[in-house]
Image (cartoon, rainbow, N blue to C red):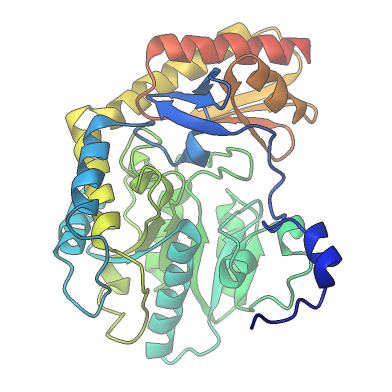
Length: 401
């Protein structure tokens, strides 16, 4: 016997099987190779979206494919009630590259942010603070779960999901005096959560001394510096992690996206005051850090090193930015071109979402965020000729807008 459908046959048939949570583009891809995707008609597209900064090695990377294939045929999942040696290996790799000390593995960026929030609150609770507040910033995007959503600054994402968890206080981004004033006026601040570069918010970069000054504030007031490197980590900006551009080591670092090259994995890294806080039973994840997920992460880092993809992101990122600035030098529609490595934003003086479809017609996949910023996050394997194609198509479309 099957349960009765309360909508009846007619109502059930009227609803799509998939929840309509995405405004999807009318295109489907069947395969990928390098920096290119191919649709169901065989048309080729240069992929400057990379699964929203996820496919750091591009598509069908030989080393990544071989590692995943081998692991699928060996062991996929056991759960965290047993030792997972590949977790220890990947944790050691990440700590070595980031300067952090400990890792907790999960499945996504928003889960890594949730783990970071819980870690900060657990440390505060151990200090006798039960109503701790984390400072967050305007323009921030930290994820879609309730805790991460409360830290996010976007009414369109938050609308209809209240009441959101308390414990966050918002100040302007790239404004150290505002941070200092908030700390001075509240006696229960326990940490500062920021993105080293705001990706979803429009590829906004802070002043070079922003993170060092936040580090100093946290040291002065015994707070935790929490960095959201979900998008900026794993070589995307021309360093393993964006905070390394300013020489800052946070207390907590959350990352995901490019770590798995398309396989879901996230990690919350801890150091200093945040290390050793979590003990058995404090946090967990059924799927987090599976043998397959960690093998994916290890394959990504092996490729980053073997192919110098972090250095390539820095070099090709500069080339791409310089080329766009030259091509759009006299275009008064462009407010600013900014970025770090292969996280690049072209801000226009008007909404430009229609450029996504126009670029697609030209064989280029791009993304528009914050309504008027063309965001380019291609694979870290991008070469100069592919960058030239991006420059040519984007500059032409902007000039014609």
